[in-house]
Amino acid sequence: MNDIISLKQKRHQKELKYEKRMLRELSLTEIKSGIEGSFGSFAGKGKKEVIEDGCIDFAIEAFLLGAKYSRFGYYGESMQSANKRCQSEEKRLIDDLYDYFINWGNLTEKDISFGEVYFACEYYIQSWWKLGFTKGEKRYKLRLH
Image (tube, rainbow, N blue to C red):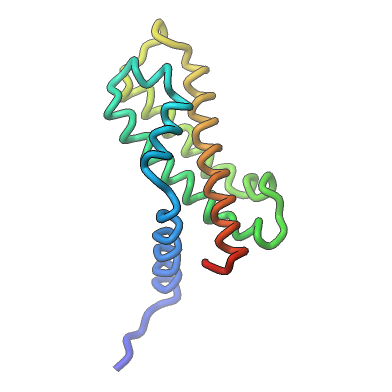
């Protein structure tokens, strides 16, 4: 006898399956080098392991967000206009990463400028979003979605 599955559950299962496939294209060493590239001077001033763990989580979230919106790129929309569609979600990720970095990094105003940290967080999230978008668009073009 067949089980009845709601449309919402089916969509959720499909989304999880797609996210698992996208995460195969991401490596931990790539994320760690991205952390060093974006926060190299800031990460050493706080608790390095704690900051690194949080940054890995945020990189994965931004990557998956970009991959989710890559569908629009496949259908002809530019990366910038697809990015505008998820502006609020991306802004939330940037703000959450900034708060995480300031709180768990034990940074004070005399250590570094908080504006610099915010711009570094913004660059970090946007770079992972773009990478997720391009890799997701490539998967759509190859019909691997």
